[in-house]
Length: 168
Length: 188
Image (cartoon, rainbow over all chains, first blue to last red; front, side):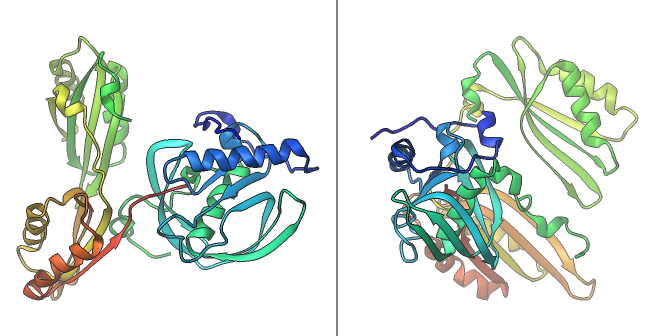
């Protein structure tokens, strides 16, 4: 077990799309364990993606079950290797922060329902539907695997209502 | 970033406002850039036909506010912009952000005087701290509608429902709609 240091921007690994995991071996399973330990060590953290601990592979972990937004609607601890979003719908805005971008938060629009497929560390392929806050967390972590930060998706300045003169 | 990590810097609050046109931000930031100032924090927006800039800028000590004022006076002489500069003391630069819940409060209804005052007084008396606030007069000249949107940090222990209840009587008294929702950032 190991809590790893969180990589912060401007480290370029955060802006680099991650490699697909070709083979799940002990090294990858250790990576998953380290991600879980690192997530549990972060205050209020509900997910960590590999590039956040300096590894450019498509692996991330998520657990929103202890968060107030996710406690009533979640799939518990998710250990995701090569996750893919198969379908998405709905939209909602939430103010997000990220351990890799300290001291800044921003409003981001995310899909509210997802169909997801990923491989677990024991090789099982899982497919399920996620919604609400769990869906938001999944999209945030999967963005990390594509080299995207929430800063790339800020939906609006604080009060878009006042700046919009037309609704095109 | 908490600015007090930079003890070698002098900090200034700069306010610039003038009739809106293309290039105000470029002109103002050019003055700052040429002087070697850093823009540490800023908020700039259109207000009516004016463009307003509020900035916290820093420069390596020694640096005086006179140098800033002189440069802005020269730059703004023909542009109609006005600039106001204040030196920030150490205790203004170092700060702790609020720790309670963050909520967004929207208030709207037929225009009448006292909406901003009554709402913000009610919040201030309960220790609610406003972090951001915008107002706008919309609707038609015959039926003007006032919109107030603010972000507020609640004191520790206060919940969004407490704010809703707190503003309930104002809603009736001022005949306005008031809604409160939680926007505390989620850490991902």
